[in-house]
Length: 581
Image (tube, helix red, strand yellow):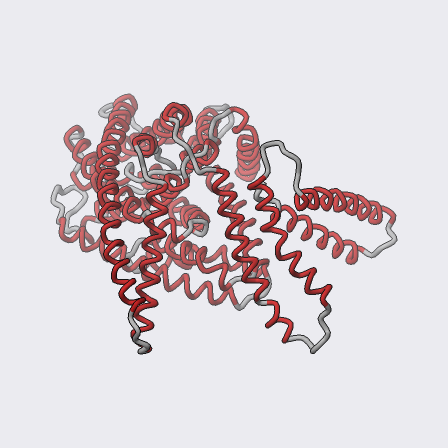
């Protein structure tokens, strides 16, 4: 079968499954894995073996970048301790425990190779968990932690994998040796992380600067497709973590795009990257299932067979679930204690800020010091309020413990093990078993667990009120800028009707938002809601008239296209104004 045809069939399958998965109540990644497994055994379907480098260096960087640009920096920073614990400490513990488990059971397997497989199965893939969680209304903080963990733990796991497999160059031991220099591994890990963060920031600053000079959204978006690889390749060449560099670049870009990039560029980037993320995320799950036939076929009869490898994979799944559960609960207790410590520090900081405010000194350095202290205090208070209002209870702990699904990175990393590694084919099958079983077991039961625990997401009414308050604040600042903007125009050229129209348009968003706050469920629309409804009806009629004019052939195609773009822009703006519905 032609591989181009397979690609087309794959895209159609991904889109179809994504379209109907919500009706079935099953996350699309789970269905795609099952479909991939079934398709691999159909007559005429060739064995699919994908080079691991294609996944790790070709698919993973854009996939992580597309997720990273959507992560709010403030939320990531507020949950940094949770993310660090799950994505670094838990990864190290998992790699060591699973490694020693396999080392004890497989006699010819060296300790570095065993720990390499432990590193392979340690990173989680939060795609299934977050897609289910967002649909069923998990708390935003819990979703942030899961997404942050998934972004960072790939880097941790791949660094450990590199340390274990490149034993001669990194830890001073060959693949067949059992000696591991923990000190050198630690130095490698620190170097890999620090260098990746530095390179990621540098690349983020450079690419955002270059893109800010491009006024064409098409050119800007085209450059954005190269950004993940611009961060990944130099980091890997310097021995750092390429995936961590990509994540840092993505978070920096997402945080600074509103300041430096044009609205058209941001909209274009958002739409194009959402499409790329959708195809990559779901395509790799379909591909993961389709590789099963080739993986099983690589295991030679005799010795450790398919049955034994699958049993070892199932035992590894049990170890992973137990380890994650034992790690999560102490982590939550520690976070609760750190929250109380933060409250005590904030109270002392408040006293210091009050003393600075009461001081009569007008020294410039003192004023700057006071302003810095006030900003620090305000940020700490905001962070504490945000984490306290969404504190992890026992329900959050249960969901966090059960959201340890593995994904395609586990399979690709396993396939990157050196050819001379003992039991290589069996280790790949163990990794595949872990990935598939955790996806199907935990992914399929997570919705029921969310319902049973009764965990609640964000308060919709509170969110609408907060949005309305923010839009009020933004609109007020915008209106205050009007007098200065009027001065830029010829004196007396701006009439009161023009100013009133600007004020009215500026206040529309906040008025719609407040109407949604005050409106009861299924209640009548307010004035602004009625305006949006009527304006959409008018736009629909205008669109029909435009299509009719195009059919008559009276107007030139370039004029028709310009009119179409104007209607599209207006309708998009109305949808954005109505986003609080």
